[in-house]
Image 1 (cartoon, rainbow, N blue to C red):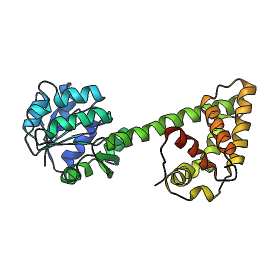
Image 2 (cartoon, rainbow, N blue to C red):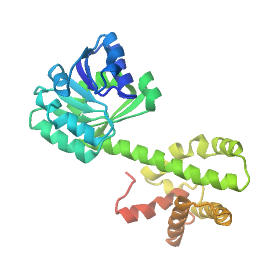
Image 3 (cartoon, one colour):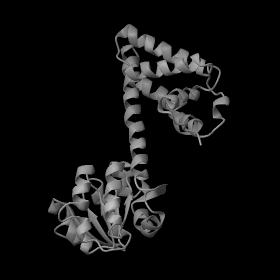
Image 4 (cartoon, rainbow, N blue to C red):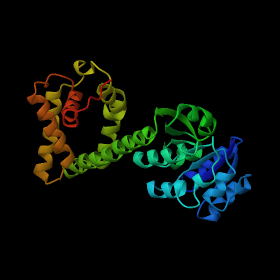
Length: 297
């Protein structure tokens, strides 16, 4: 496959290298010429602009910092759209705005070119080892056509839905990761200030239900699949009691715990609605009511 690759940074560089290793013919570009040396040594060709990359390619990938850079490279002056041939595919591997990628997709579709949003997750190590998760939005036919190239960078390649779906999925993933980190910070600062060593807390969390996969194997499936709230593994009233004890320590020791306090209020709301004997995950219905949408399939 004749591939153009734009953006050879910490993530893009290893992904491009893995496409070369998989036998694809690459034309590459980055604003820093020196970062392409290893790719050129491995057989890639250099192009002097995004447009020049597009002129040589049947598929163009971008891996860029954000929406502004993606839009500029895709549809700006001297961008991909100016030279990419009808029938080609443009896939953005960046973490992008679904609104921006849909706007780009509409512009390309007018020229007979399919656009895919294909953000990745797995970090620099995953990029190097070709073990990334790739979340793809756009036309399924275009996805199937370029899947051999995506398989060269990830072992968990998924078709998510129409344009923007991949971008949304990546943002959901990152939001959970980032907010969970802050919640862990709240819990650890409370525990440490209450006199427990951080190494001991780490071991407890790793050895307990949460560390053994409660979030992935229990909480999230209960949110998505119907009927799980009645399979009580931890009653909501008991969960509220435990969280209340934790926030009580926070108040005693002057540890700010805004996330825990907000969650405690949601648990109280669910109990006030008569759900105290259901599984603790039933508290997600409070957020469902606020957002006027149901999570469960």
